[in-house]
Image (cartoon, rainbow, N blue to C red):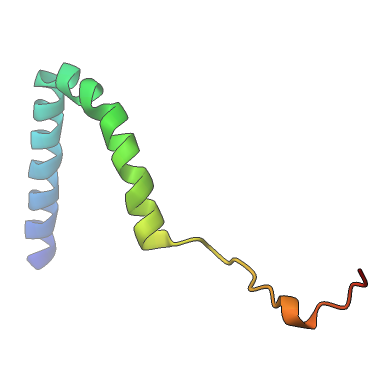
Length: 64
């Protein structure tokens, strides 16, 4: 019975998203570049720099 409520809620959310996007598609496309620019710092904040290697230059064996 619980699964039916989740399915009903998901279906209602999809229908509402479709109606809202259909009616306001011009506004969504206008905001898309700003959302992309907003995604960059958010990804940088939550994802970080990745696996940067920590370089220790004190044990560098290169000769001058």
